[in-house]
Length: 175
Image (cartoon, rainbow, N blue to C red; front, side):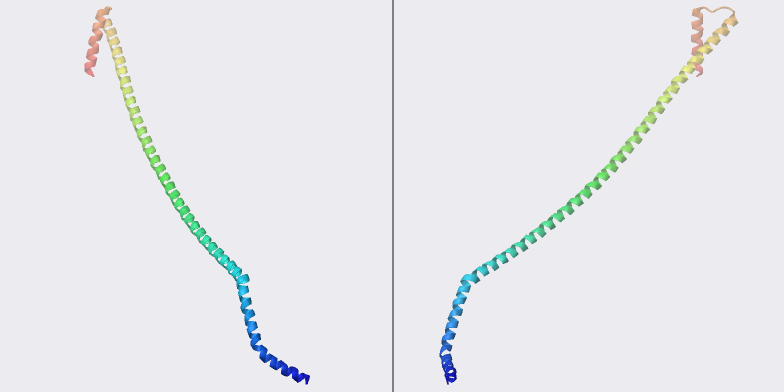
């Protein structure tokens, strides 16, 4: 009997407590949710928000870094292109200067050769004139000597000078 009473009593108690149990469980559940919201949910959401902001800032920093790297890469490419252009300009300028120097050297050499040729021609003409003058003097001396032998007399200094000047004048007319 006691077993039935317990079973019966438990059944009656169970029916009566069922609404209270549900109400109490619901009350404690809501209370637990409120406490969890204040104690755990708020800080947990704060941590999640901070984590979200940290990830967003890291993504933004990575994007900024990528853009900066891209900008630096473009800048380096531009500098390299500019350096190549400058190098080509320097080489081209050196070629032009070399060509100008070569032309200047050739011009100078040609003018120096022409000057040396002119100088040699003048020197030859001068030597030719000296040789002709020497030959004239020799001719005059030989003429005077021949004339002196022909006349068998010695010609005076005055006569000798007149005779030489006449002979030189005749020799000058022949040339």
